[in-house]
Amino acid sequence: MVRHRVTRRLRHLVAPRLERLPAGSLLVVRALPPAAAATSAELAVDLDAAMSGAMRKLGTR
Image 1 (cartoon, one colour):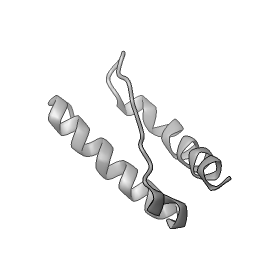
Image 2 (cartoon, one colour; image 1 turned 90 degrees about the horizontal axis):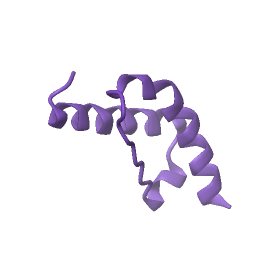
Image 3 (cartoon, one colour; image 1 turned 60 degrees about the vertical axis):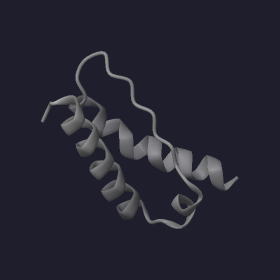
Image 4 (cartoon, one colour; image 1 turned 90 degrees about the vertical axis):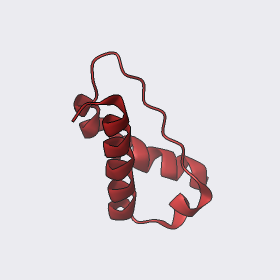
């Protein structure tokens, strides 16, 4: 049940970051197998980097 554990950890990390997204945005988070061994801090850094990159591509933030 590693997949479910990673899902819960990511859900917890994503929740406070959703307000950064423009209204009406959809967010898809894809976790690869190495995510299972990552710490929550490492997942947070990767999530922030991915969201920042997506926001730059959208021309926001």
